[in-house]
Length: 285
Image (cartoon, rainbow, N blue to C red):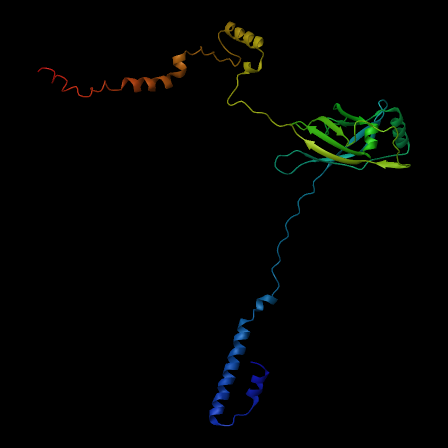
């Protein structure tokens, strides 16, 4: 009830009937107050139960390998930047790589400027096995120094790995034209690379169904020699089991021939010709 209702409650009754009405109004007001108090949810003020925190996953460790470069067609390789790699935790496995920033400054910048005048190549080098870079054969990729400078040192490196995780090839491309202008100015102090690195894996081809005999992977002459050697050793193949003699046509396809033969043999005779019973009537007047 509003403030007017409370003022009406405080006013004294004028008659017995008014007193009864006054009492009824007070009882109704009291019932309304009790209903509001019962509807109030005291649990909202209670503190919520503490939810145990989920354990944080262990940090993924990355490994590094050195990306080497050589300015020119001769000379030693030097470290250009680090390449971070780690195994992907998602389904399918594979590697994830990230290349650190690289730039040419000082003596390397001057060597690259001289390479532009001579028209040489800029070469990258990575080990084929990242886990043992010193003991694995290297993989090289080169691009024209003029094309690299014309593309403002924007480059794309594609690493192709085998299913065993070995680096098989490096594709090194720049978005510049094949022909370079006669002069290409460089920055006075240093130039930075803008690199995009991608990883590819070879797609698996179709596999034969069932077990393929070992002789199927040999050339014709070698397979024939193996068969002759097996005959000379007592008719046994390379596994020590006796070779089975070749099967005839009926032995291979009897399960198809027998049903056809039974269907033909179980068929009935010729059906009686139409009008055969009355064939002797007529014609004898």
